[in-house]
Structure formats: structure tokens, C-alpha cells
Amino acid sequence: MTTASKPLLPAAVVVDDHPLFRAALATLVQTLYPDAHVVCAGTAEEGLAAREASDEFRLVLLDFRLPTLNGAEAVRAFCKRFERAAVVVVSGSEDRREGDAAMRAGASAFLHKTDSMETLAQALRSVLAGRPVAPNWEQADGGAMFAQAGADLTARQLEILAMVCQGLNNKEIGLRLGLAHITVKIHVSAIFRVLGVVNRTQAALAARRLGLPQS
Image (spheres, rainbow, N blue to C red):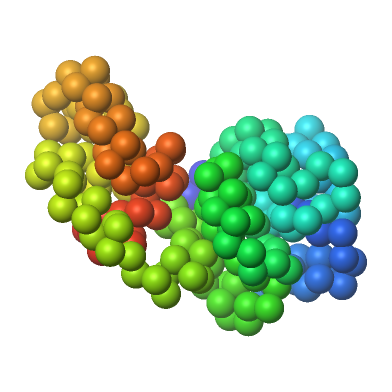
């Protein structure tokens, strides 16, 4: 297969200890991306072991409450192991603390098992396009806190944040804006502090909630 014809989603792993729901998620992925190779696992350990077979994984669908390794610890493990993949948590819980913990741990989305297949499909398309999906309650809340955070960012920081949302690293941002690498790093750290986030994925989520331009 040539580079030009390479599928958007070469491979995905679905990790859930409920066989029927695991199969439903796998079917959804294969319906959306017929060329994708989908691996199913019933435990976090099985899912992590799948990484040894390929470096083509671009998506992980992960249950938050698994036997043994689970929760935010599991999210961190999958983000580290599948460094090129978007980790999407699909949980039976609507506990905001779990959703917040998953997003802080690096998840690209926190979805509910009660969500419709169309909602899940839209979320998968979004994260695979590089756009994280905020938990439903964050989308509903809007958030005066984030509006205030946006007001506290300088024009230059807003410009840099938009580039972060595009997936540019600090070096690329510096080259585009004519800034030293250390200057960009300082700005990015300040952006994280103002938004109350700890990584670029969370910064992109905050930018979406603020309605900031991302291109």
C-alpha cells in the first residue's frame, strides 16, 4: 500500500471487559474505517500487550473500570504505550471526577456507554482529526471560568494557543512566528497555567470551550 492510499485508521484496539459492548465498539470502528485492523481485549494488560505486534495503532477505545489495571492509571499506561494513538475512554459511569481524571491523564475524549452510536462515531472522527472531545457536562456547562481564562491570555499567547491546537510543536511555532524556542516554551507554560491545564491535549480542549480559532 502506498503512502497516499494509507488508511486514516490503520489499526485500533478496543479494551472492555464486557464482550457484547466490546464487539459493538469493534463493529462501529470497522463500519467507519473498513480498512482498519481492530484488536479486541478484555483487560488492560491484554490491550497493552497488543502494542508489541504493531506500531500502526492510532486509536484506543478504553473502558475506565476494568479488572486490575484501570482508571486514570490505565489511561496513562495506554497513552505512554500507544504514543501515536488517541485514547478514548468509554465509560458506564457519569461521575465527573472519573471524567476529569481521565482527561487529566491524557485521554482525548471521555464518552458514555449510553451515548448513541452516532455520538460515538462523531467523537471518533473528531479525535482522529486531532480534535479532542470534552466530556458532555463540560460542553453543557460552557464555563465562565474558561471565558475569564481566555481574557487573561495575551494576543501572542492566543496566537500560540491556536498553533498548539493545530498540532505544531514548540520548534515549529517558533519558526513560524520568528521566536526563540525558549520564548515559545515560556509562552506555552504561561498558557497552561492560565487555562489550568497540564498538557497540549487539555489546552486544545480548553481552546474549544473558549471558542478560539484553531486554524
